[in-house]
Length: 126
Image (cartoon, rainbow, N blue to C red; front, side, top):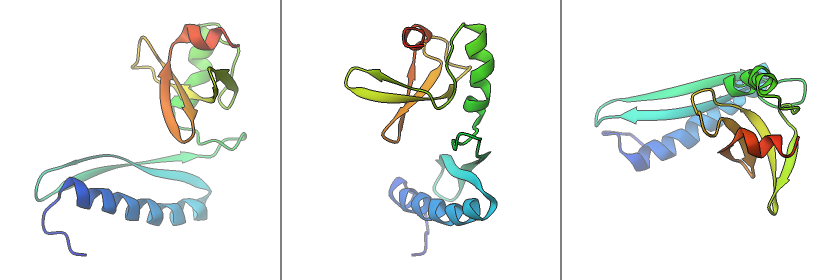
């Protein structure tokens, strides 16, 4: 398929193809590579690509995952990346710390989706 103008639908399919191509490279080097934000106009597009090494616990060491131990220690949180907790009926895994989010800086994941939660919520479990 030849792209003559960038649109949301054709960029979605391009992202899928890019991720599958990047997965092959990531497996070869033992890292994780993902596509991020895509900004575009009709004739050009800018695609952010992020690469992370895989940590000892098997999770990608993103900037948020690397920042978590330092910020958690500052706030008295006795947890680490990869720890899980049950909130309501779902189990969440700690993925990292978003230093730009003041009210809800802790990044947690559930079922492939990421959410931000407050320090107090995580402190109540750890």
